[in-house]
Length: 158
Image 1 (cartoon, rainbow, N blue to C red):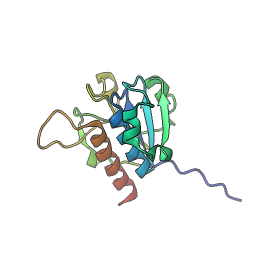
Image 2 (cartoon, rainbow, N blue to C red):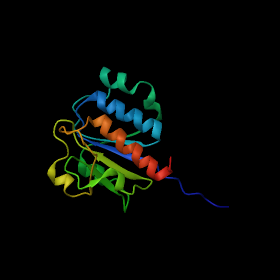
Image 3 (cartoon, helix red, strand yellow):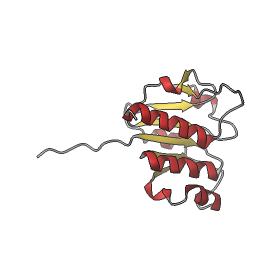
């Protein structure tokens, strides 16, 4: 009698101190269609019962494994040994397309108005999304979607 080990989720998308309900709702939809788990690290700039969040997530929340964490320290304590956490930032040192993502990786994004704090982003491998047209940064939900789908493509070979 063989016991199969559980297959880890495709990905974990981690939002550090997210501020906008609509962005989080859209990221939750992305997680739902990819089979990724969503981690939200407090404090939030909204409530999960906000109308804007419900409108953005629609009926996709049923398909999302949502994990709420009181702080970065609380989140970090849940990471399995050897977990790979990738910090997405405009201060990235490598393009996301060259990361070599693996099943179960964690993709970390900072708050909309300020991005990841220096102490956090400098402690992790930093990835960036190309922005050939310039601008300060992409919208959080767009950035998370681009990154998650590229990670899924690398892992699953779509």
